[in-house]
Image (cartoon, rainbow, N blue to C red):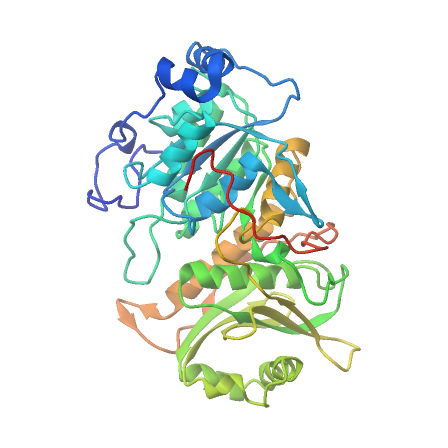
Length: 456
C-alpha cells in the first residue's frame, strides 16, 4: 500500500511520486472563524476534535467523514451528495431531515474547490489536510461512524483506453490504513464504480469483507424515479435484456451498466457472474444488432413504447454497444441511445411482450433537489443500520464489466472498432438479491435553492 495517488491533480504530473497528503494546504478554521460561524458550541466541538475527544450530538446521529476529489461546481457529484447529507433530501414525496452529521471533509484538489471551501466554512465543518486526519478528526484512531467517498470529478487525465484516472482507490486505501491501525471499521460509500482498474477494485471489495464493514456505491440511476413504477420480482425468468442510455465515456456507460445489473441480478437463480464482455463501436454496432434478432426486437419494442418508427435507433449512424454474456446463458447489451433517458427492456420467458422500464426526467436546473435524492437516502440508511442497501457484489460486477468493456477495443496497443470478446473468469461471482424496491416514488421534488449558509 502506498501513500502516492495514481491520478494527476491540476498542476502536478500524473505519475508524481510526491505524497499528496503533504501538498494540500491547511484550511482548518481559526478560533475566531469558528466563533463567527458556529458560536461557542462550534468552537468547543472543534477543540474537542483537536484533542482527540469525539463529540456526540444529542440525537446521536452517525458522524460522517466526507472525502472528495473535487468540489468546485453544482454539477459535481460532491455537491449533489454532500448537500443532501447536510441539509436533507426529498424522499417519498416530502423533504426529509438529514439523519447524519458531516463532521469532517478532505478535498484532494482543494485549491480548485472554492465552492466546497465556502460551504464548509459556512457550515462550520473543518477541512483536513489528509484523509487520515479527516477520519480520525485529527487524533490517532478512527473517530467517525461512516465514510463517504466521492471522487467523480476534477482535473485528472485519461489514459489511452479512456479510463479517467480518478483517485478513488487512493482515497479508499488511506481509509483502510486507519481501519487497520484502529482495529475497527465503519460503513463506506464509494460513488460510481470502485476504480478504473480491476485489481484495485477487487482489492477494495475484498478489504470490505476482510475487515467486515458494509460497502455500497454505484450509480444513482437504479434508484431514480421509474416509469412504470415496477421492480422485477426475484427469480424472474429473463432471457435477454437491452439497456439504452448515455454511453459516451467510462462514467456514462457505468451508469447504464449499473442500471442493467440492478434488473438482471433479479433473474431466475440469481446472479451467476459474467462469462464475457465485448465492446463494438461506430457503425459496426448496428451490424451486430442485425445479426442478433433478440436485440433488434427489444429495440423495436422500446421505439414503439416511445411512439417512434421501427428502426428509429438505427437511424443514428454510429453508437457503441457493450455485449454481456452471463454464465447461465443470459445475454444483454448496453446500447448508446438518446431521447429515452435510461430505459431497460427485458425479454421474459412466458410473456409475449417485453418488460420496459424507463428512468426519465433528470431534473434541473441545479438546485437543492437536483439529481439523486434516493441515493443519499440509502447512504444514510447504511450509516444508521450498518447494513448494505444492496449486495456490494453488484458494485464489483458493474465495475468489472466497465473495465473489460474499456479494454475490449484494444490489443497490443492497437484499436479495433469491433472489440475482442474478453473472457472474464474473474467475474464468476454468485449472489442472490433479497432487497425490495428501492427507487424514488411519490411526488417529484420542487425546485428549491441550495441551503448554502451564504448568499450565492
